[in-house]
Image (tube, rainbow, N blue to C red; front, side, top):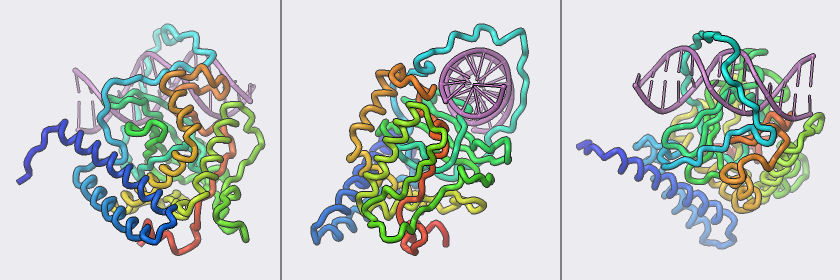
Length: 329
DNA sequence: GGAATTTGACCTGG
DNA sequence: CCAGGTCAAATTCC
């Protein structure tokens, strides 16, 4: 067998798969909120569809981000309001020579999310236009990469299928031990009703004082609140890299995580269309001159501006019910 | 003044 | 050779 599929057809199929999965995930989210007694059955059906899609995708080696795109608006990288003067020749005829170990790490996780916040503090060290991709990819490394030798990295790119979401790929693991980079789980919260997730967010307002950051934080939080509003939040206990043990899960569970996150993200997307829209615009057309502050009018605003923005894992981490993801055997 | 970001150049794997 | 990943100087922001 092994009929060789034309590359473009394969890509198109992959794209379709991704979209189908997104749709199914959204549908699933919707069903979760449904108050119909047939909902569970429908959910089961959708789960089945998702599962099939996942296996099909893994068979085709399709990740969360369907490559394939077309022309590229090409991110208006231009450093926002002040725009950089220029650099002309790099100083004197200085032949930069450096050597660095080429990427050798394997991706450890890929998520689709609509916020760049993940509880860690990242420092952006590069951005690159990617072939076949409409959006540039941003490269981040843990802020403690130099200080504590933490080698965690991540790549962030806008989703092809839904530009208001980000495809975040994590590499390496966090070896740093800084309070600001360790996800805080605020899960007990005593008597707080689960449908009020406000207690899942904790800001450390010491210093976050830039406009862009502030507004960004605002929308992030509202998103989380929105997500918390539904039971899906319970399933969002994602694979935070706590320390030594990273998310070395099987591809299978990866898919599941991704699906569920997709589902939850879908909800958030619905509830916070305003933000999604503006963010998309910001990147696409209005291009950065709008938000002066922050200093990053280009692609994904770095979360660093948020200083100590700590996001707790949504949902019940401590519970045994995260077997949904079966992250650990 | 220090920290973070931007961005062109450099380097490497496929 | 090309695309993608990283470096590091310049610049901006707080």
